[in-house]
Structure formats: structure tokens, C-alpha cells
Length: 344
Image (cartoon, rainbow, N blue to C red; front, side):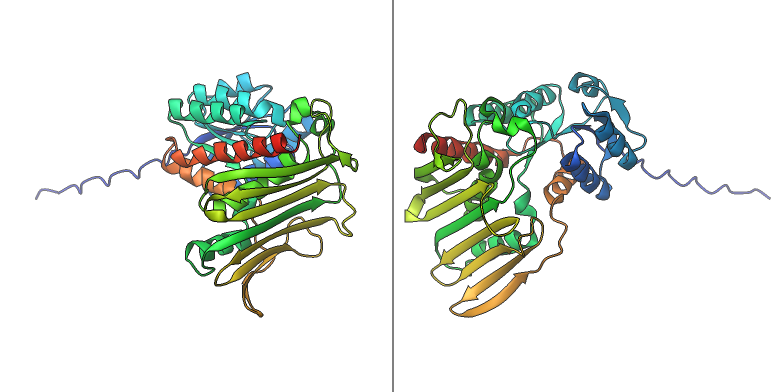
């Protein structure tokens, strides 16, 4: 009597997750690391930060990650991608170095201090055929995603005007923010970049026909951008089709609360509003307006800060190839350049 041996069951495929290095692991860098790890799609393979305390805190999230000292050391770790959360002056050159080394990049905003730097990074991503993302994090709020969906679906009709505000009752706590050579600009570069992006993103990046702006430092018109950064800025963007967007932002404004963050959208058929709650930097509501009637679109409580980081991690796990949508980063930077030129 012969015995029959059952065929061996094929081994389950081994899951290979992209290996990510984290350059700069202060509060924001660690928050984005946590969001990416939460997707289960990436491995935190290496960490580098100039401050040992930051690196030690990051190691609590990724205890098996290699501790590196510099970008060069990170690039020796056989990575698939890198997350950059360093001072603004370093973003473009560090992103380009990583891309030219064959790594995908997720960078904190701003990607560059002007449109030329941003264009150089996007060109490097295209040449390397590698994924490039920038942490324009307010896109990740449930409220802004709901409003954009309603606009794209035609519920507001033709949107003819947008009014966006970001006033911060405090200023940045790191000296480099106040050095225009390092930061590229003041509150407009720091906060206004989010507003510019939201204005264009909600409308699918229309052409900007003209820009008018005024910039102030300590209550006086900004007179020398080589030594000053603005702490109050207002700009009006004339968009294709006659639409208009007004953008206002500030540091250290007497606002009566910690922050004023708002975006209003006025359409032929309806309106919509995005608001922070009680001066919070993190809690938002969104509403849709039909005449005097209101419809709630989003309430506070969504964990939006790491949303774009998580999206990038999931995208990278599917494909590391260049995403042509990052060309819109250049348009945002060109508008920023236009605001500084108009406000000079």
C-alpha cells in the first residue's frame, strides 16, 4: 500500500515595506513619523537629528531604527524614502540630494524659499522618477476635504470669491524664522503658504492673473526684505474667470485668542465656511450655507495633522514613481513670489 504525500503549501509572500529615513525629529517630525507608522505601510529604518533629545524621543516610536548623525549617514542606509523636517533653508538642497540618490521625499513646507528652489526640486523628482510630497497639512482636515468635495461636485455653483485667514497670536520660537536668508519670508511663508494652497487646491489650481499685496513689520510697511520679515500680510489674487481670493495672515496679532483660522467660499448657489473653534490651532468646524440655512459638514476631533504624511506613505507603498501633480507646488511658490514682489 503506497502513501501519497500532499503537496507542500506555498509559502506566504513576504511583505516588504518601504524603508524610510527621518531627517529632523522635532515635534512635527515625530508626529509625521507616528502617522506614517500608523498606516502599517512603511518601516522607520533610520533617524537623524542634530539634537540628541529629539532623536531619543523618535527612537521611542521606532526602537529598531538606526541612529544616524547627518543626511549623508541616512543616505548610506539603503532607504526607499526620506521625510525632511529641518529648517526651511535646507529643504530644497536636502530634497534634491535625496531624490538624486534615488529616494522618494516627503518634505515639510515650504519646499523652497522661492519658486526657483521649488522648481529645482520638482525637476529633480521628475528626473529621478521618484515620488515627491509636501506637508500642506490643512488639506487633511475633514472640514476642508468636505468643502472641496462640495465645490468639485458643483453644490456651491460657480465660486467667485474666497476669503482665507490665519492669524497667530504668537510668533515662531526659533531665531531662523526671523532671518530672511534662512526662512525666505515671514508669516506669509510660514502661514500664508497654507492659505495660498487651499485657495488654489479647492478650485483645481486656476491661473492667477494678477496679485496685489501689502506687507508689514512691527506695524510699519516692510521696507527691506534682505533684513526684515513680515509679521502681517494681506494679498488679493485675481484668478482666471474673474474670481478673487483674499489672503491675510500674521504673527503676534492682538486677536483676542490664540489663533484665528478661517476660510470662506462664496458661490452662486451656496456658501461654505471653515473655522477654528475657540482659538484652537487643531479643532475645526465646516458648514455649508444655503441662504440663512446651515448644514454641518465637519466637527472637531479629526486627527488631521498627519493625514498627508499617511497618504504619502500609502502612496509610496504602491509606487515610488513621480507624481505629476507635484507640479502644482511650483504654482503655489510662484504666487508666493508674486506676493512678495507686489508688497515690496
